[in-house]
Image 1 (cartoon, rainbow, N blue to C red):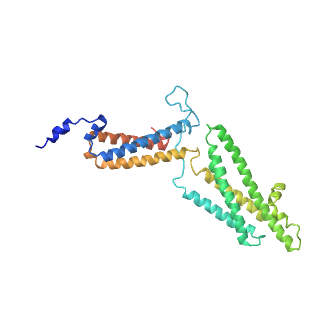
Image 2 (image 1 turned 90 degrees about the horizontal axis):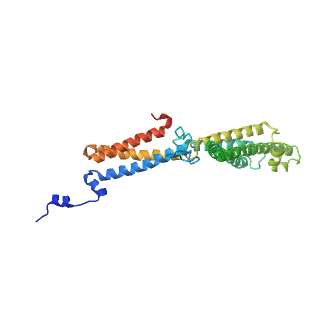
Image 3 (image 1 turned 120 degrees about the vertical axis):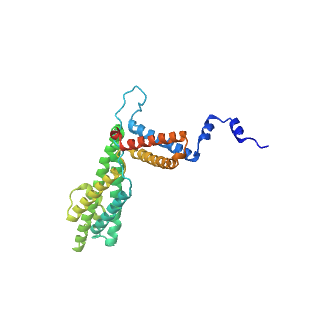
Length: 301
């Protein structure tokens, strides 16, 4: 004789953490929503703590009687894509390399090809050093006023890096001068400039701004301008406060996952039980809070 299914289910005793799923009509959607909500809540806590502590620069006084330092009061500023930045860097290297190749080709035995090999090395070093050393590392680490030691070291590094790049471009300009003078001397049958063309660094150190040709001056201006542009692109590659852009992007990714889980849950809202509907409402409220936090503390009502 078959057992009464209702009697069997009534006699079963489930643990409290399992009994709640008896009334769940969409367990898969509920599990996905719960996971997405937990991750989003943790990412939101990371962002709020980063703002309070300036990325760990000051002590977190949340929940204590200690006076709190004014937190970061703006949203993170960073590009949605880095394709434009890399495109500009590649364009700078290419354009400066072509210009330098023309300037260096005068005294090269290989002509334009020889000038290009020298020029691309100078332009690549100039642009990449300006981007990473001055912009991405130096200028960004100067922005966190609550890390005075790191900020001071970054300022010193920016000054040293700028001086090195100026010296690099002056050396390239003097090299262009020496190539021109060497070619003119050889054309006249002389040889006293032949050895000097191999030591542009010595010439740049002895008389840094003693450029003698218009092409050398143009080469120096072009190189320093491109280095400044590269430094600016390095500074705007991510938020000025190191780490702030990363923690904001992680919260954005978590909020997108939470939004997708909410959309899947709302499709079957009429079939859901009361506890599941409460989960949806709590997740929606969390998503609203995240959107306000990502907009910045000043935007919150």
